[in-house]
Image 1 (cartoon, one colour):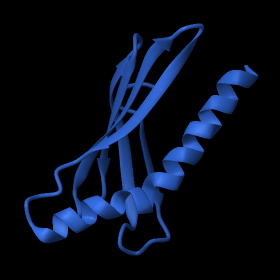
Image 2 (image 1 turned 90 degrees about the vertical axis):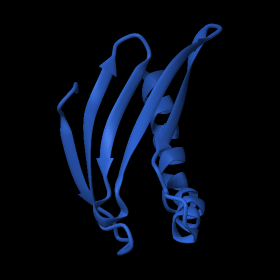
Image 3 (image 1 turned 45 degrees about the horizontal axis):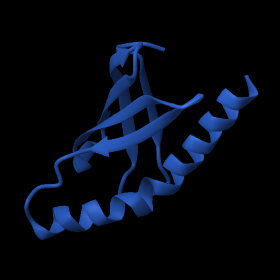
Image 4 (image 1 turned 30 degrees about the horizontal axis):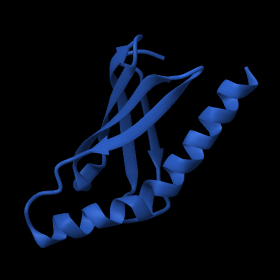
Length: 102
């Protein structure tokens, strides 16, 4: 998959709903970024950074978004880990298993 590839899915959580994700940066050396559209919740960018770590590699995933200055934005920021944290952890475990099995 490379720049321009796009994916869409629908979450069961009605507060989130439909999400689209498009790869916007794919740097063979160590970084991949994708633009996410959470509809009414606004845009975000997901980032994967790969760094050498001794005999292996370390993958760091992150989500960058502007939650705004108000109390609703701060609340949303606190809820992000609850909404997506388990998915990120499962994705990291799946990625690790895939890499170690190949």
